[in-house]
Amino acid sequence: MNQEPSTSAENPETQGEKKEEDQDLRLVDPFVDFECDICHMKEKSLFGDLKGSDGFYPAPVFFMRDPFAPPVRVKTRKPMLADFMVIGSTCSLCDRVICFDKACSTFFGSYFCASCIVRERRRFPDKVLEMLSKAQASIQKEEKKEVK
Image (cartoon, rainbow, N blue to C red; front, side, top):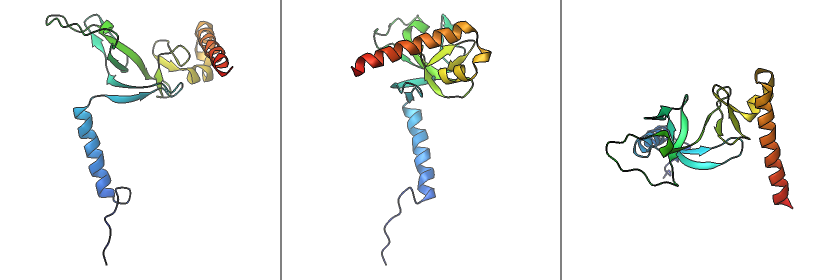
């Protein structure tokens, strides 16, 4: 009897090899697929601690070189935060991936997603809740205009 080779879904050994290949690819390609869990914005980016000669971000962030400005090519100049576009981070309460849109997240000592802010509203000042509700209301107005 001839048996067909098993697929990777059936063979645990090849699944382990696939994971090793994925890790090897990450070493070659440092970019990760970013997708906001709230608005579903997608982008290829880098993830990690972002430090520049002029400061740093307090938590690991998703970032990329600013695509709207050519890179500065001065050998003695170290990269600055302005050379990068930071697009998101993870919520410090639930670890969801969030973008920095005002309707999706807020920085209040660390990054928080809109869902956690609403759920834990007693822990946040009224000003933060007000800013979030205004941002979400403006997005809902824009969505209504697009539907018409």
